[in-house]
Structure formats: structure tokens, C-alpha cells
Image 1 (cartoon, rainbow, N blue to C red):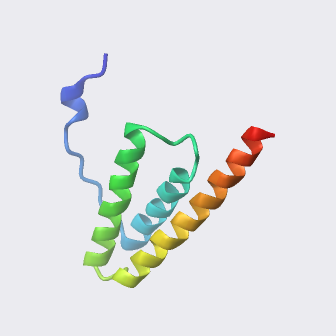
Image 2 (cartoon, rainbow, N blue to C red):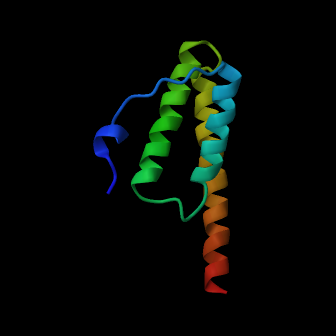
Length: 90
């Protein structure tokens, strides 16, 4: 049985802006996978938004760059899911 008290403890990790952007990109890549669903997906999506907020606050990303990231991620995810659906049917 999970120890929910331990799981709810806050952990602070320091990143450089570049390190955070790198982790952000890897999480976004993982979110493209069709089987990445459920509560853990929502946690990853929240991490992406928090990372973007912090990268914006430190001046590393602008609003327009964040919009571009979202557009590219949506387009790439759609392609992957369409390809996945075709392969499942075949």
C-alpha cells in the first residue's frame, strides 16, 4: 500500500533554465504516446505548464514561444495518434 503521507511531501529541485527546458521537452515527448493516459498524464501535463511558467518568469521563453511549443506538440501528437490508429486497425 502506498504511503500517501510520504507521497504528498514537497520536494524542491533546482534546475538551470536549459536543464528545465530539456526535461520539459522529454516530458512533452512522453505525452505524445497514445498509451500515456490517466492520472499520471495529468501530473505530467501540470509539470509541463509549471516548467513553462518558470521558464517565462526567468526570461528564457516568451508567450509566443510557448504558444509555438503548444502548436507543435499538438500537431505532432495528432500525427502520432493517427498513425497509431491506422496500425491498430491493420
